[in-house]
Length: 367
Image (cartoon, rainbow, N blue to C red):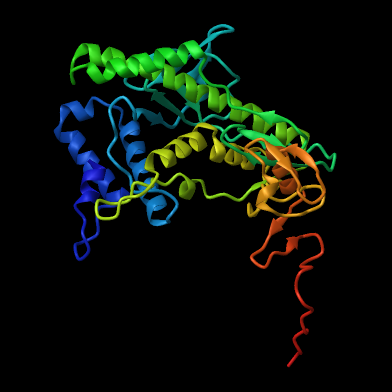
């Protein structure tokens, strides 16, 4: 309802109702409709708070405009004013939480619940599994104090290559699971919309895709924790993931070229969790993550600094045409990132002493 109210706004009309006005309208609606009054008022108020924050993010330019909640995708709610007695541990594996208007609900105790929790969120994934997340801001991981610097080069074939020589890859489905996913997707195309058989096929696909998502998140958490604990400074390429994964289909009047190839590249970038890895690194190691310009890091030799497209023999092989240095291409790029090397528009190698291919410039005279 909040999204619909704001969708009617046009330039020249009165301002759309804000959070305070919508909360007042919610109180009036609860007094009139029994079905709305049967729900938890705190859950409904938090939904309006989330919408107000989403609109602030949209006008701030950091997020897109809020859209409609989709069935089987945006299922969940947030509960606040949680007291310590509302969370109880039953045994080593199970606990229970008090949900207003519902009562006690059991959940699998997978990790320790921090003290002072004031809210939690209940969500349902596409596979139909319910998850309970308690809101807490964990303390950042302290720096080890070893003065070590690591460079991280993100790729599609190798998810993350470290300057130490390690090659890390996001785990995926097994060959058997991938065959099953392809088979169920073909079966889905033959099912009639709205039928029970189509619903079963969609749930089977959701179970496999959720498994891929869980594996990617688990890999990101473990990798980011290992990097934050092992190195004082972590350097990554400064990439615009949103811009790199933008669709290339164009418009009807001016259609794009290589749309399928670009779509495959976009899928590979998102499947390897490029943005998620850097985001979690910034959460766990604040102030210790440095972003380096990505220009020519894959064509530059980490041994002598020579830059040439011919240095990159293939996706995995790097061989410098000047000094003959041979290395894995992603590891070579990660070493350039670790060294903080970036080639400017003038061709200068920074920060190794400034430009060497420019004539001396006269210093500006003070007025």
